Every structure is written in C-alpha cells, then in structure tokens.
Image (cartoon, rainbow, N blue to C red):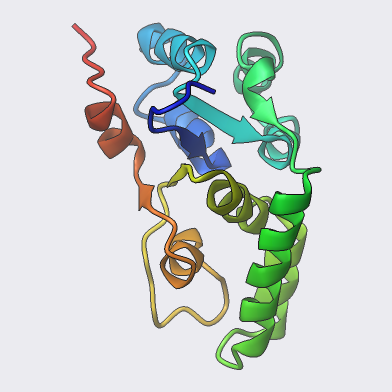
Length: 167
C-alpha cells in the first residue's frame, strides 16, 4: 500500500452491485480498468474473504477478480486483524437486539473481517450498505464501523475522493 495515502478496502457488494447493474462489464470497462489501476497504485484493496464470496458468483466478475485484481486481495491472517475481528465479535455477541441468526451470519461472512481489516490497518471501508440502528435480523457493515470508529463510504464517494472521472 502507498504510505501516507488514504486506502480504501472494498466490500463484495461494491463489486457485485457494479457488475450486475451500473458498471456492468459490457457497458463500463473503464470502471474495472480503473479499479485495477487503483489497486496497482495501492489506493484500494479488498480481503481474501471477499474474494471467496466473489468466487461463488458471476463469471465475468470471478474472472476479473482472479486475473486483474487478484493481488489486491489481502490476507486476514494477521494478528492485528484477528484481534480486531475478535473485538467486533464480542461487541456483536453482547448486543441482545441482534437475532442469533444475524450473529451467526456475521461470524461466517466477510463483513466482520472487512471491518476488522480496516480497523487494524487504518483503512476506509467501502460498502453499499447503509447504517441502520434498528437492524435486528442482520448486522450492517456501517453499524460495526460506527461502533469501532472506522470510516466508511459508498462506491461513488470513494471515486470522488480519489478524483476518478470517467470521461
């Protein structure tokens, strides 16, 4: 990663939402080329658990992730990330408002690891999810970010922050 620069760590919904709609591979190859370049420049990354989610989906997205973006998926096998994930799990477990099924999903998906990675590394989470304090049957990424003072933005804010323009 580039020292001194803001780094964004992307959730699977950033990739999946873009591929399925507004930045589909056939209508916006510049978006995907831009992500590749931003990753090469050390400005964006994602995590190994997000890659696992992408590997189960869309053929075009899976191929792109495994060829053009593969080096940008960072391992969560790091003591500081594991410690941060443990903190988030304790926080989730201590909240009676979350249903047990939501806690189980949180523990098994990439979301908690994404926030833990961002917290441990001082990165910004990029997700299309929205803060929802009343959530009970799922645990939105922004709720965890808020609880642990991790900054989060959506895809479009990240692109603006990075000065990206598709001209």
